[in-house]
Length: 268
Image (cartoon, rainbow, N blue to C red; front, side, top):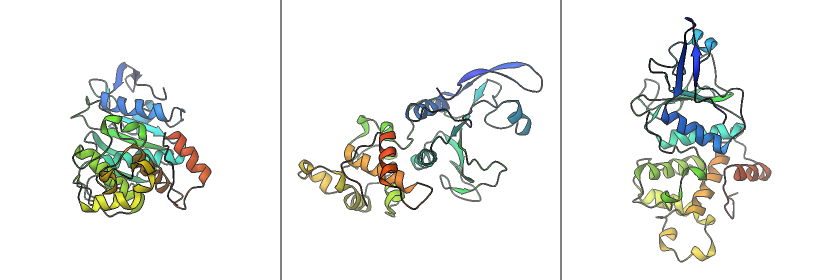
Protein backbone atom coordinates (compact mmCIF):
# COMPACT_ATOMS: atom_id res chain seq x y z
CA UNK A 1 0.00 0.00 0.00
CA UNK A 2 1.45 3.35 -1.09
CA UNK A 3 -0.03 5.38 1.77
CA UNK A 4 -0.14 5.18 5.55
CA UNK A 5 -3.80 5.36 6.53
CA UNK A 6 -3.35 5.35 10.32
CA UNK A 7 -0.56 6.20 12.72
CA UNK A 8 0.62 8.61 15.39
CA UNK A 9 2.27 11.99 15.04
CA UNK A 10 3.72 14.66 17.33
CA UNK A 11 4.02 18.36 16.59
CA UNK A 12 5.42 21.31 18.56
CA UNK A 13 4.20 20.05 21.95
CA UNK A 14 5.85 16.64 21.37
CA UNK A 15 2.63 14.86 22.39
CA UNK A 16 1.97 11.91 20.11
CA UNK A 17 -1.58 11.72 18.79
CA UNK A 18 -3.33 8.95 16.89
CA UNK A 19 -4.66 9.79 13.44
CA UNK A 20 -6.50 8.11 10.56
CA UNK A 21 -7.54 9.07 7.06
CA UNK A 22 -11.31 9.52 6.90
CA UNK A 23 -13.26 6.75 5.09
CA UNK A 24 -13.95 8.76 1.93
CA UNK A 25 -10.24 9.53 1.45
CA UNK A 26 -9.23 6.00 2.41
CA UNK A 27 -11.48 4.60 -0.32
CA UNK A 28 -9.93 6.87 -2.93
CA UNK A 29 -6.36 5.99 -1.98
CA UNK A 30 -7.12 2.26 -1.91
CA UNK A 31 -8.58 2.52 -5.41
CA UNK A 32 -5.60 4.45 -6.77
CA UNK A 33 -3.22 1.97 -5.15
CA UNK A 34 -5.00 -0.93 -6.86
CA UNK A 35 -4.44 0.60 -10.31
CA UNK A 36 -1.11 2.40 -9.71
CA UNK A 37 0.71 0.43 -6.99
CA UNK A 38 4.19 1.94 -7.43
CA UNK A 39 5.06 4.12 -4.46
CA UNK A 40 6.15 7.73 -5.12
CA UNK A 41 8.16 10.01 -2.78
CA UNK A 42 5.39 12.63 -2.93
CA UNK A 43 2.72 10.22 -1.65
CA UNK A 44 1.40 11.48 1.67
CA UNK A 45 -1.47 11.70 4.13
CA UNK A 46 -0.90 13.05 7.68
CA UNK A 47 1.34 16.12 7.93
CA UNK A 48 4.82 15.69 9.31
CA UNK A 49 6.47 18.26 11.55
CA UNK A 50 7.90 20.17 8.60
CA UNK A 51 4.56 20.51 6.83
CA UNK A 52 2.82 21.39 10.08
CA UNK A 53 5.30 24.17 10.84
CA UNK A 54 4.59 25.89 7.53
CA UNK A 55 0.86 25.16 7.23
CA UNK A 56 -0.70 24.03 10.53
CA UNK A 57 -4.26 24.55 9.22
CA UNK A 58 -3.77 22.16 6.30
CA UNK A 59 -6.24 19.33 5.80
CA UNK A 60 -3.19 17.07 6.18
CA UNK A 61 -3.13 18.01 9.88
CA UNK A 62 -5.27 15.69 12.04
CA UNK A 63 -8.20 17.47 13.69
CA UNK A 64 -9.17 17.06 17.35
CA UNK A 65 -10.65 13.67 16.52
CA UNK A 66 -7.50 12.55 14.70
CA UNK A 67 -9.18 12.76 11.29
CA UNK A 68 -7.04 13.52 8.22
CA UNK A 69 -8.89 14.84 5.16
CA UNK A 70 -6.11 15.34 2.62
CA UNK A 71 -3.94 13.07 0.52
CA UNK A 72 -1.13 13.56 -1.99
CA UNK A 73 -1.00 11.23 -5.00
CA UNK A 74 2.47 11.17 -6.53
CA UNK A 75 2.91 11.15 -10.29
CA UNK A 76 4.39 7.73 -10.94
CA UNK A 77 3.56 8.31 -14.62
CA UNK A 78 2.79 11.86 -15.72
CA UNK A 79 -0.31 10.95 -17.70
CA UNK A 80 -1.79 8.93 -14.86
CA UNK A 81 -1.94 11.97 -12.60
CA UNK A 82 -3.67 14.03 -15.28
CA UNK A 83 -6.15 11.20 -15.84
CA UNK A 84 -6.99 10.81 -12.15
CA UNK A 85 -7.30 14.56 -11.55
CA UNK A 86 -9.49 15.19 -14.57
CA UNK A 87 -11.70 12.17 -13.90
CA UNK A 88 -12.37 13.28 -10.33
CA UNK A 89 -13.15 16.81 -11.51
CA UNK A 90 -15.56 15.57 -14.17
CA UNK A 91 -17.27 13.27 -11.69
CA UNK A 92 -18.32 16.26 -9.55
CA UNK A 93 -18.10 13.98 -6.55
CA UNK A 94 -19.85 15.63 -3.60
CA UNK A 95 -17.07 14.53 -1.24
CA UNK A 96 -14.47 16.80 -2.87
CA UNK A 97 -13.41 19.99 -1.14
CA UNK A 98 -10.72 20.97 -3.63
CA UNK A 99 -7.88 19.54 -5.73
CA UNK A 100 -4.54 21.04 -6.79
CA UNK A 101 -2.33 19.87 -9.67
CA UNK A 102 0.20 21.53 -12.00
CA UNK A 103 -0.48 25.10 -10.78
CA UNK A 104 -4.22 24.56 -11.18
CA UNK A 105 -6.96 24.24 -8.58
CA UNK A 106 -10.63 23.40 -8.67
CA UNK A 107 -13.09 23.31 -5.80
CA UNK A 108 -16.58 22.00 -5.22
CA UNK A 109 -17.68 25.47 -4.13
CA UNK A 110 -18.04 28.72 -6.05
CA UNK A 111 -15.08 31.09 -6.02
CA UNK A 112 -14.40 34.61 -7.26
CA UNK A 113 -11.90 33.15 -9.73
CA UNK A 114 -14.18 30.49 -11.13
CA UNK A 115 -17.33 28.35 -10.73
CA UNK A 116 -17.36 24.95 -9.00
CA UNK A 117 -15.44 22.06 -10.59
CA UNK A 118 -13.60 24.38 -12.98
CA UNK A 119 -9.81 24.58 -13.12
CA UNK A 120 -8.41 27.98 -12.13
CA UNK A 121 -4.82 29.18 -11.68
CA UNK A 122 -3.09 28.28 -8.43
CA UNK A 123 -0.34 30.63 -7.25
CA UNK A 124 0.80 28.89 -4.06
CA UNK A 125 4.51 28.39 -3.42
CA UNK A 126 4.22 24.66 -4.16
CA UNK A 127 3.09 24.16 -7.78
CA UNK A 128 2.13 20.51 -7.12
CA UNK A 129 3.96 19.40 -10.25
CA UNK A 130 5.02 16.09 -8.74
CA UNK A 131 1.67 15.11 -7.24
CA UNK A 132 -2.06 15.69 -7.01
CA UNK A 133 -3.41 17.10 -3.75
CA UNK A 134 -7.00 16.32 -2.81
CA UNK A 135 -8.92 17.54 0.20
CA UNK A 136 -12.28 16.04 1.13
CA UNK A 137 -15.17 17.57 3.03
CA UNK A 138 -16.04 16.86 6.63
CA UNK A 139 -19.78 16.70 5.92
CA UNK A 140 -19.71 13.36 4.08
CA UNK A 141 -16.31 12.03 5.11
CA UNK A 142 -17.80 8.64 6.05
CA UNK A 143 -19.07 7.95 2.52
CA UNK A 144 -16.83 5.15 1.25
CA UNK A 145 -18.52 4.44 -2.08
CA UNK A 146 -16.23 4.03 -5.09
CA UNK A 147 -14.66 7.09 -6.71
CA UNK A 148 -14.37 7.66 -10.45
CA UNK A 149 -10.62 7.83 -11.13
CA UNK A 150 -10.74 7.52 -14.88
CA UNK A 151 -10.18 3.81 -15.42
CA UNK A 152 -12.51 1.09 -16.60
CA UNK A 153 -12.11 -0.60 -13.22
CA UNK A 154 -13.92 2.28 -11.52
CA UNK A 155 -17.18 1.83 -13.39
CA UNK A 156 -18.42 -1.55 -12.32
CA UNK A 157 -20.52 -3.94 -14.36
CA UNK A 158 -23.57 -2.79 -12.44
CA UNK A 159 -23.23 0.70 -13.98
CA UNK A 160 -22.88 -0.50 -17.57
CA UNK A 161 -24.35 -0.25 -20.08
CA UNK A 162 -25.02 3.47 -19.76
CA UNK A 163 -28.43 4.62 -20.91
CA UNK A 164 -30.50 7.81 -20.61
CA UNK A 165 -32.06 6.50 -17.38
CA UNK A 166 -28.71 5.66 -15.77
CA UNK A 167 -27.73 7.41 -12.54
CA UNK A 168 -27.33 11.18 -13.16
CA UNK A 169 -23.72 11.18 -11.97
CA UNK A 170 -22.87 8.45 -14.52
CA UNK A 171 -24.53 10.35 -17.38
CA UNK A 172 -22.68 13.52 -16.36
CA UNK A 173 -19.42 11.57 -16.28
CA UNK A 174 -20.10 10.33 -19.82
CA UNK A 175 -20.84 13.85 -21.01
CA UNK A 176 -17.68 15.23 -19.42
CA UNK A 177 -15.51 12.58 -21.01
CA UNK A 178 -17.08 13.12 -24.43
CA UNK A 179 -16.35 16.83 -24.11
CA UNK A 180 -12.76 16.28 -23.00
CA UNK A 181 -11.93 13.57 -25.51
CA UNK A 182 -13.69 14.97 -28.57
CA UNK A 183 -14.72 18.57 -27.85
CA UNK A 184 -18.36 17.58 -28.21
CA UNK A 185 -19.74 20.75 -26.63
CA UNK A 186 -22.36 18.92 -24.58
CA UNK A 187 -23.96 20.66 -21.65
CA UNK A 188 -22.89 18.55 -18.65
CA UNK A 189 -26.31 18.52 -17.02
CA UNK A 190 -26.82 14.75 -16.57
CA UNK A 191 -29.65 14.85 -19.11
CA UNK A 192 -29.08 12.49 -22.05
CA UNK A 193 -30.50 14.54 -24.90
CA UNK A 194 -29.97 14.71 -28.64
CA UNK A 195 -26.50 16.27 -28.40
CA UNK A 196 -25.29 13.47 -26.11
CA UNK A 197 -26.70 10.82 -28.44
CA UNK A 198 -25.11 12.52 -31.44
CA UNK A 199 -21.71 12.59 -29.73
CA UNK A 200 -21.99 8.91 -28.79
CA UNK A 201 -22.82 7.96 -32.39
CA UNK A 202 -20.11 10.17 -33.89
CA UNK A 203 -17.30 8.96 -31.66
CA UNK A 204 -18.03 5.58 -30.08
CA UNK A 205 -19.68 3.40 -32.72
CA UNK A 206 -16.22 2.47 -34.04
CA UNK A 207 -15.66 0.61 -30.78
CA UNK A 208 -18.59 -1.74 -31.25
CA UNK A 209 -18.37 -5.21 -32.75
CA UNK A 210 -20.00 -6.26 -35.99
CA UNK A 211 -22.44 -8.50 -34.11
CA UNK A 212 -23.75 -5.43 -32.26
CA UNK A 213 -24.99 -3.81 -35.48
CA UNK A 214 -28.49 -5.00 -34.66
CA UNK A 215 -28.58 -3.26 -31.29
CA UNK A 216 -30.83 -0.30 -32.11
CA UNK A 217 -30.05 1.50 -28.85
CA UNK A 218 -26.32 1.43 -29.62
CA UNK A 219 -26.88 2.57 -33.20
CA UNK A 220 -29.12 5.43 -32.04
CA UNK A 221 -26.57 6.65 -29.52
CA UNK A 222 -28.72 5.93 -26.48
CA UNK A 223 -26.60 3.11 -25.10
CA UNK A 224 -22.90 2.88 -24.22
CA UNK A 225 -21.72 -0.66 -23.58
CA UNK A 226 -18.48 -1.79 -21.96
CA UNK A 227 -16.52 -1.82 -25.21
CA UNK A 228 -17.63 1.70 -26.09
CA UNK A 229 -16.82 2.93 -22.57
CA UNK A 230 -13.33 1.44 -22.72
CA UNK A 231 -12.78 3.07 -26.11
CA UNK A 232 -13.87 6.41 -24.71
CA UNK A 233 -11.44 6.02 -21.83
CA UNK A 234 -8.61 5.32 -24.27
CA UNK A 235 -9.31 8.56 -26.16
CA UNK A 236 -9.80 10.42 -22.88
CA UNK A 237 -6.36 9.28 -21.68
CA UNK A 238 -4.80 10.41 -24.95
CA UNK A 239 -6.42 13.83 -24.74
CA UNK A 240 -5.35 14.66 -21.20
CA UNK A 241 -1.75 13.80 -22.07
CA UNK A 242 0.10 17.03 -21.11
CA UNK A 243 2.24 16.85 -24.25
CA UNK A 244 -0.96 17.65 -26.21
CA UNK A 245 0.77 16.43 -29.32
CA UNK A 246 -0.74 12.98 -29.29
CA UNK A 247 0.75 9.76 -28.04
CA UNK A 248 2.66 7.07 -29.87
CA UNK A 249 1.04 3.69 -30.38
CA UNK A 250 3.51 2.26 -27.85
CA UNK A 251 2.42 4.80 -25.23
CA UNK A 252 -1.25 4.16 -25.94
CA UNK A 253 -0.71 0.41 -25.67
CA UNK A 254 1.03 0.87 -22.31
CA UNK A 255 -1.79 3.04 -20.99
CA UNK A 256 -4.45 0.67 -22.28
CA UNK A 257 -2.78 -2.16 -20.38
CA UNK A 258 -2.34 -0.02 -17.27
CA UNK A 259 -5.94 1.13 -17.28
CA UNK A 260 -7.41 -2.26 -18.22
CA UNK A 261 -8.83 -0.80 -21.42
CA UNK A 262 -9.26 -3.20 -24.35
CA UNK A 263 -11.06 -1.72 -27.36
CA UNK A 264 -10.74 -3.41 -30.74
CA UNK A 265 -9.92 -0.22 -32.59
CA UNK A 266 -8.54 3.24 -31.86
CA UNK A 267 -9.50 6.60 -33.26
CA UNK A 268 -6.78 8.25 -35.32
